Image (cartoon, rainbow, N blue to C red):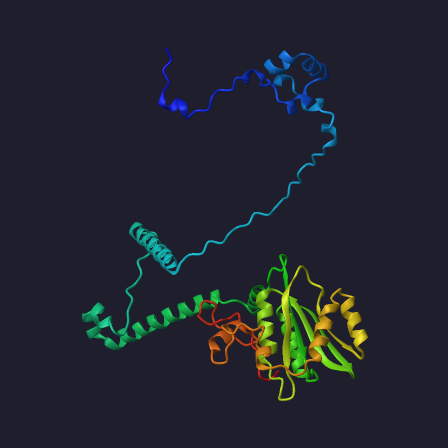
Length: 367
């Protein structure tokens, strides 16, 4: 006799119509051959009991040929190598292990007789303890020998430094590489409004800095009676634009009755200019046509709108500057992040020194 369990009450009752469940779903039947489809339509028992999935084929469907399946293009993406940076502690550990290994190899060669053992390292403070009675017998001769050894060590040190020192061409290439930036994923643009740009020194700094920072754009001088001003558009990487904004808005002394302002700063997909050029126009329509030829007439519209607003306030002048990096009382940040143009090449410190050899400095004679 069947005894019910407590769990049986929790389970749903089995359907009495389980026999009516078809052996094949209706949405799979169009993939069967036509003769089998007609047989299943005529025979209810075959449609319910028989499973005919082995006869299904994609070609049997009339709509399959209307569906397009494009092949995926294989994109040959270059392999990206992520640089591995070591901490200061790891760099010291690797240097210590390398020096110990080099000293161990040198000691083994001396024990095997492959190289002669080095002579003792004499100094004026220890040659009396090292030589003993010999130093007492002829101290003047030994002192000259010690000084010759000290001078030779100093000469070897200077020669090693000279061998590692970069040539003038290598220094230029290094500085150029540090200023180059990848703009394939986007270009940053800065638009400046200058009240008066008649000073030739200011034009020189604007032109040379843009070229050395690998910036493209235009400096348009408008001499129209209703709009006498200058506008600058520069395109490039974020680091170069940041330095150029600091040059225009902080580092150049425009004078008492003159001023400059960063009107707009943002990102675009690609560059609109191929180089940095100066243009002078006598009318606003001619100036607008220059920007329209590059498909950027809105740059001129923003500059013209800013011209009608008059002189700016203090907040407008520093609106597009990073005040954490550029402050009047922080000279360290100005030296590291805000270079100006180098006109006269001076001797650069050793590349292993702590000086910032990547900065570009304007000589006093050119300013």
